[in-house]
Length: 355
Image (cartoon, rainbow, N blue to C red; front, side):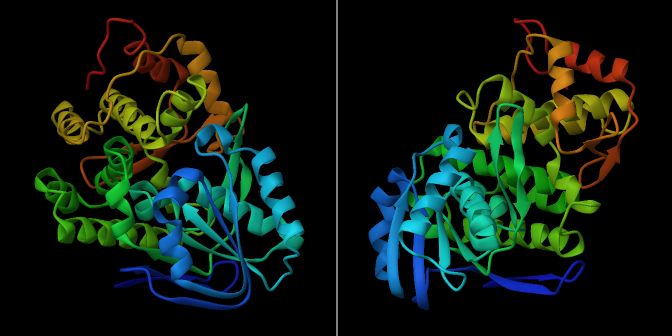
């Protein structure tokens, strides 16, 4: 099955997201595959058997969010120079969201831009990170603050790669699926409540539906000037959680799960989401063993982190909140006192995230 991306706001860009067994890929140019040791150990032989290229090399970078840095991108760039890539060469991102983000960013930089394709191997990257052209790295100030919008030439999603994914990594991807359902499609949310992801056809359908939703959003708003910002539901809070824990305690999807819970609490405070709806979302996250508890050590410090987020502007923070199941709202004028009141409910060490 194929989901098309058709962008026309800045320049005409089209490419396909293919959800199926990895096809044979032939390139009449030099190709560099960027991956990490974990993915390479499980799947590199499969990928290499599927690729024919004029010249083919593999660059392996350390595994983990902690290595999503400018230093790692520079190392990839150096490898590209060592392999004498030119503007007609191609990079392949073979891994999860970290690999995809860094490979895409490297592609945007090398000789002012060369082509890349995404072959995502985690659920999170298959349903979210590989689609839409967001690339970049983290730094000490926050998540993905250095980067570019740079679209791939193609995305190949093979659900078979998920069979070696640890349960925790698999669950992290489900947080992004829940995010899209809460924001855009109540019936999809209700489907997820009874979905059995162990069934291959169900999993494939979930991936397809999630990709279609994201493609629908990206096709309208490539550079996050409007509706694409809605995909950051849970992320404004989740990015602070990741930063406070030095990207070592939680996987990205786990931090998003926590962020969703806090965002829902703020929506309840504003009267646009009910406690019953919030409980329903929490139950779904917990069905997949995602974390729904977090202790904020200092409310003022947590709040100040918002201003390093890409969604803040002119001293104002844009919050993405649910407005009923399947609905959303972007609000930029919430009083600091209201936000801190909600954050304070997560401050005590004995607290459990409540809706």
